[in-house]
Length: 65
Image 1 (tube, rainbow, N blue to C red):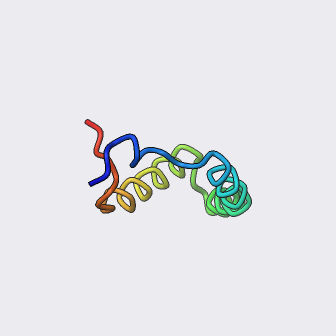
Image 2 (image 1 turned 90 degrees about the vertical axis):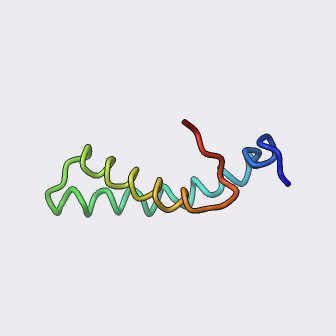
């Protein structure tokens, strides 16, 4: 069984690479949503909710209270 420190440990290099890939798509997605009439606050809440729902189902993700 993994301990909490192992679960939370991620490679900074891999995170940086992942972030670089996401930034391009995220900028385009936000622009499209703004053109559709949504505010940045609405976009932030919607994206945050979707990410939370998507990752909460993973068995190895820690739950914070």
